[in-house]
Length: 372
Image 1 (cartoon, rainbow, N blue to C red):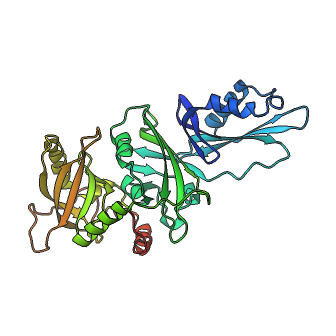
Image 2: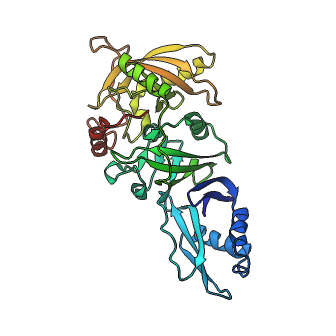
C-alpha cells in the first residue's frame, strides 16, 4: 500500500499494488488489510501503524516492526519515497511473514511543481522510472516537456488549472502512458496536491511507475491522429500559452521547429524579455472573448530570436483565464521586427539558457517519435 504524504496534515492512499485509490483514507485501507487475517494480526493496532507511518515520514527512514503471532512471526515494513529536496512524499507499507521477502517495490519518486519558476523539480531517482533515461535527466523540467512525453492524454486542462490557479487542498490523480524509445511505453501514476506554505508555493507530486505487461497500450483515436496529420501537412502549429507568466504550457500539434521551448533553465526564456509584458496585456484583452494577434520574438536553437506571429484565442472550459490557444507562424527573415532587438540584461552573451547536452540527446531521438 502506497500512502501519499504530500501535505503535512493529510495522508491518504495513492495505490494498493498497481491499483489506484484516488486519495482514499488510509485508515480504511489498513483496516481492510488487517481484516484479511484478523486472528494473525490481533496484536497490531491502528495506533501502532499510525505512529510508524509518521515516524517514517518525519524521520525519513525505513521502519521494520516485528509482530509476534501464535503461528509465525510477521513483519510490518515501511519505506519512504523521497522528493528532490530529500523530503518524504509518500510511504509504502508491506505486511507479511517475516521469513518471506517483501515483493520488489516499483520505482517511485516525489517531485515539486514550483509556480515561481514554472518548473517541475525532479530527483535523479526519476531515471529508474520507465520512459526516463539517465541521458535525458535534468533537475528541472517545464510542464510542456512532461506533457510532450505523454501519449493519448486528455486531462491537460485539469492539470494546468491545479498548477496555475489552485488553492491549498486541491488534489488530482491520474495514470498516463509515457514514451519509452523503441520499447514498450511506460505507465506512470501521478498524484498531486497543491501547496502554499513555507515549504512550497505550487504543488507536491508523487510519481509511481506502474508499468506492467497486463496494462494495455493506449492508442490515440483516429480523429486525434487525423487532426495532427492535417496540421502537420498544413504547416500550422498550435500551443497553449500561459499569458500571465509568458510560457508555453502544452503543444496541441507538433512543436514549432524554429522555437526552442524545451530543456530551458527558465520556461519564460522562450519569449524575448521585452515581449513578456505584451503577452500579459494580451491576456487582459482576451478576457472579453475576442481574438488577438501580435508579433513576438521567440528563442531559437542557436540562442537568437525569431520573429513569430501569434494569433490568440481564449481557452474555453476552465477557470484559468490566463490560458490561451495560440497559432504560431514564423515571419519571413526579411520582414523587420516591430521593435529593435535590444541586449538581454538578465544573462551574459553566449551563456547557456538550458540543458544543452540533454537537448542534443533528445533531438537526436525526436525524429523517431511522434507524440499524439
